[in-house]
Every structure is written in structure tokens, then in C-alpha cells.
Picture (cartoon, rainbow, N blue to C red):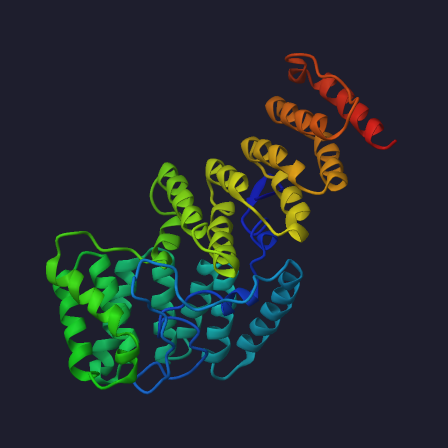
Length: 382
């Protein structure tokens, strides 16, 4: 989102909306599909229950408060350390899995997939295959995720698979339209893992999926995880803008950390979107913590697209007055889009009394913009 060398830097605003390695602790993860960290992915591996009575609702686990910007620097150091470990490790799987978790928490799923694919060239650890399936799902590549899980099931057999993995496979098969395949996988799960404690804990989720497969009258109900996956670049720009609004509205039905986490995740994805319209909508909807608001607005004011900078100018007054004034004055000095310049002027005029006057359409003249920018700096330095 930042203007570095005339290109969009997709990490520019992501770290400024409070995503960090700590997000891995609050990201809802389906059993078996993430956070494996080198443990066995076959039967016997403990898997947390993450389902609720309504598979389309927010995941039930309570989350700690989202991290602040300072954590992003710790994440950078951790990434360097893990990459060094990965380069020298005899068994690359543990470091690769931990690095993939970190990169996913930072909304860098494609980088995480590259890490896992490289590690699979050196290791046949099935945990890497599970992690890869989860990343493919989170990137909206559901058929490929199904293929990865089915390959694992063929190689080891359903009795050796953790029931959580089989549930994920059935759910994904249903999402991609393979109802018969989903029903067969769910049948295998219930036949070979009937006495597994995981099935008792997740009974309502199993019954819910079975009920959907039995009727097949309505389309599958996507989980929040899959809505976020669709936001990561699938569909048209208008679809992604609509989906962003839906996710923010869903988050706003929650409170506390659960609201903040889903809002943050959806907006971080949108802030890295290749479309200026999606990024602009994300800036408009963003509600970063007060301690991060100034950095958020500074990044948005430096976006490569004028429409994003215009929306940023309109929301910058929500920062502390002194910070907002400084950000807008600095941004005006190099703003070359007339409409965005006018928006910055209007925002400053709402913050500072007796400021310079901008005549109608005067922003169209570069010399006038430069003169007014100097006048605003002089006025705000008093």
C-alpha cells in the first residue's frame, strides 16, 4: 500500500493494522489444518475443537486482545531466525511449519505456501501436506486443497487420519460441489472414528454437515475462514468490496477481542488488495486502535492510488489533533492529485482555524497547490 518506487507494497499497511505473529494465537484454525509445528497429523495427534453449533458463526474460542504495532518488529526478527534455521536444518519440517504459521498470521499466505513447497522437496513429513492444504484453502484454492487431503487419505487410509482432517476434507468437498465425495468422507469419519473424543466434542458440527449433505437443497454455508479466503483476491472488485462490508458487519455483531480480530483480519486483507477501490474502502472502514491510528493514516496517505489517499485524508482527523495536522501538512507537500489535495485542505480546515483559503478549482494549478501547501505549513507551525 505504500508508494515505494511507484509500486504497491502489500506489506505496507498490513503490519500497521496490528497483525503480527501473535495473531496466530487468536486466528481460528480448524483441527488438523494449521499450527501443526511438526507433530504427527495422523490419528493420535491431539487436535483442538474449533467448531460451534453454527458453522457459519464466529469461532467460539476467546481470544486475547490483538497485538499492537510493536509486535511486528518481533515478527520480523522471528522470521529471520526461522529462515536461518530452515536453511541449515537436516529436517526442514519443524522450521517450515512454524514459519508458515508466522507468515499466515501476517497475511502472507503465498509466501507461506512457497516455504512449505520448498520444504516438501526435502521432506515427506505428512504435516507439510496438511499445512499445504490449509494454505490452499486460505487462498481460496479449494479444489487443490481437497486434492491434497484426498492424497493424504489415500496414502495412509482413513483410520490413520485424525478425524479433524477428515472433517475438513468433507467440508471442503461439499464447498466445491462434490456432495457425494463429501458424504463418503463423512461416512468414513463416523465409521472408523466413532469412539474418538474429537467426535463427541464436535458432535454438533458433524451433525450440521450431515444435515446439509442429506438435503442438498441449499448451497453450502461458508465458514468465516472461507469468506476471508474469498477476500484474498477471488472474484471481481465489486464482489470483494461487498464481501469486505459483509465481514466487517459480521465482526461488528461481536464484541471485544473477537470483534477486533475479525475486523483486523478482513481489513488487513483488503488493505493489501491490488485494487485501489478495495484498499480505499478498507481505509474508510478501518478502526485501528488509538495507538496505531497515526501510523495507519500515514501509510494510507502514502498509497500509490489517489483514491486511497483521498479516503485517508478524510479519516485522518480521527487521529489526535496534533498528529492529524502534522500528517496532512506533510502529505500536502508532495500531493499531485487535485481532488486529493482538496480533500487534504478540507480536512485541515476542519482542524485548524483561520487557515489559508482555497478558491474553487484552484487545486487544479500545480503552482497554487505548492503555494497553499507552504501556507498551511507556515500556519500550523505557529
